[in-house]
Image (cartoon, rainbow, N blue to C red):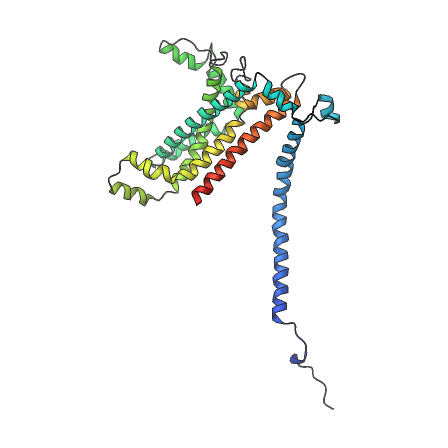
Length: 319
C-alpha cells in the first residue's frame, strides 16, 4: 500500500482576509500601546504641574484657610466669600488698573521695538549675527540679576539714570520711591527684558517670507514703507498674533521684576494683581490664602479669555 502523503492542498488554511485582519489588528494594538507609552510622561507632567495646582488653587479660593488648616486640613467652606473680599478691597481697582497699564504699555513697546530690530537684522549686514546675539543677553540673564541692575540704575541718589539726567540739567527723579514713578520704572525694566523675545519670534517669521515677494514689490515701485505695510506686516500676522498672546500671558503674571524693584510700592503705586496675590498669600505674618488664591484665579481667567479670543481669530482667518 502506498504511504499516505498529505499535500498542502489538503490542510485547511485560514482565509487571507482573516489573516490580514489579524495582523492589522495586532499592529494597530501595538501602535496604540506605543503611542500611550510616549504620551504617558506628558500626561503625568500636565496632571502634576498644571491640573493639580489649578485644582488646589481653586480649592484654596473656596475655603477659609488659616496657617493651621493649611497644614492640617479641615478648612471650612466659604463659597465665593474670598472673591467678594477681593472685589470689596480698596486695593483691587488700583491693582487691576496697574496690571492693565503695565501689560498694555509693555506689549506695545516690546512688540514695536522687537519688530523694528527684526527688520533691521533681516538685512543681513556684516556683524548682524553678533549684534543679534548680544540683544539676547537681557532675555538670558536671570530675572533677579536684571531687576537688581535696574534698581541700581534707577537709584535716586547714585543711579546712573539720574546722573545722566543731571548732565542735561534735569533734577533727580525718585524712580523707585515715588508712587508717581514706580509703575513707570518697573514697566521700563520689563520692556527691556521682553524685547529679545519679540525679536526672536518676529525675526523667525521674517525668515519664512520668500524674497521673491519683495523683489516683485520692488519692481512695482513700492517704497520701503509700503512694502512693510502691504507685504511684511500682513504676512507676519500669524506670528505677530502668537507673539502678542504669549507676551500678554507672560506680562500678566510678571512678579519677580516688580517685587525685587519696588515690592509693589510705595503706597501700592506699582501693585499689580500678581504682586497682590503673592502679598496676600505669603507676604504677611498672617497670610490670607483664600483671597490670594482668588486673585490668582482672576489672572488665570484673564489669560484664558485672551487665549480663547486668539483661537477664535485664528479660526476666522482659516475660513
